[in-house]
Image (cartoon, rainbow, N blue to C red):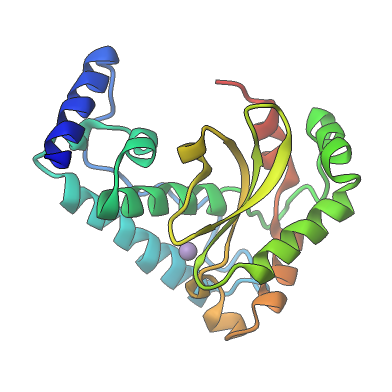
Length: 217
Ligand code: MN
């Protein structure tokens, strides 16, 4: 019954906006070479993280929606409205693309423009934002994601989500995500999550995050 309602809802959404993507979902290319982020993130980690884990979510999602009305939904629609395995795999695809695309071998090390002003306003300083993000990464129990988001009110906030959690569910605008699943760092750092998070700072491209902030739908 729930499934039927969801299918009807999906058909309704599709009717509202006929210019939908065509299934199947495709992997987004990694925007740098596998060895580009060494030594902080090894090529072997990216072989597994991008080449096996992320690939697995894309393939599983395609398998789950194939032949159903959901095959023509966008990832964002599935994240907002789906439940269970379809939500989990859709969100894991989106989250990984968002995560990989904010890393760079030649990043801007600091925020700029209006985003920098917002960081100062809501966190006091860029250093305090990083400290808060680190704290959230270290205190998230088990697997999940730490997000910097803009709430509907315009306030910037950090939220921790278990498993595949994604702030689009709560009508928040994601700006940055840190993957704290063990698969993101276990090859390079074993169980030392603190070291893995520390190693990430020189790779986060704050230009990308600053641009995400000023982009408006
Ligand atoms: Mn991951």
